[in-house]
Length: 156
Image (cartoon, one colour):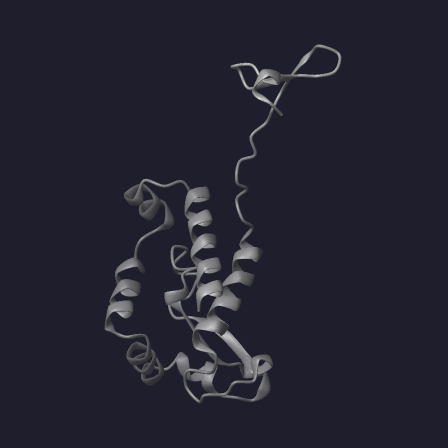
């Protein structure tokens, strides 16, 4: 479309002389299931194997939230809050071990003190508190998480 077809209001002439308003598409809020799918791909690329036993069979591995997602919505899609462990379905005990005191200490060493402290600091906050502190809407936050996960998948 050349400049002469468009007036200063962002409208263009149709064949019949009427003007049609052009709509600018806004980014859609990503669905939570899509974000979980991205998160799983990112965690598999990030860790590659069970953090406890080293198993690399993707079919036997589960991504595990360090701080349960039921306790904290802020960390739900945060890759720092995830590790890869063998699932309980195959008779492996790695996923069960995470829930023990010794398992939590092991996870703490694996993720490092900086990441552990970030998780512990964010754990008691609600999503609403966090968004107000950050000056973001939930949509902006979800779009940011989507961008972080895609970047992690592409550059890991």
